Image (cartoon, rainbow, N blue to C red; front, side):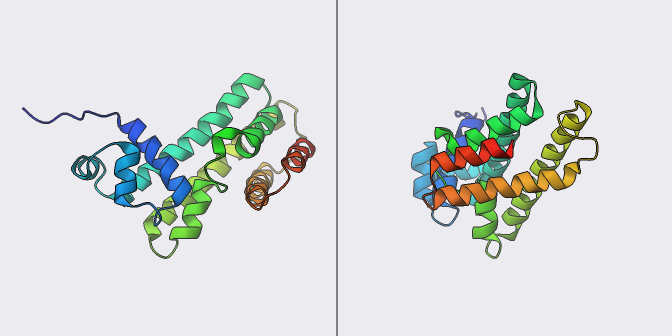
Length: 188
């Protein structure tokens, strides 16, 4: 009888994602992964192929979770601008992002551009995918008259992504949480 997987892959990937997000790719040892995901090395490598294979799945998980958070905010608020405000609050002021000051995708580009170009390229693709999601939602805001008909949704999507990255950097340098909230309010 063949061995069956006795763990939930999504839970393993989520746990690994949190560890990679906190420590980075190079800073995460195999032992760290074993302890975090509660798998022995054989099971870990059998399921994911390599540390880089698990990291790749963690990047996809992170991007999917980010998209889900924004789409859930859109559904709950009924407004694109309110959804973006909530998304920014969650990402910059919420406790769910306390483990790392920087977006995992940005961290990947910074850390792995030279040493793991495939993972860096994946992170870049996922950032562009997020920007396209922003543009799609902003186009909905134009249709719903939340934004003017002449709004350049592609440029605005890029601007929002840049502002999120910048505010995260500001926060990681000890930026004032009240100032971050005020900037989010002014932005939306």
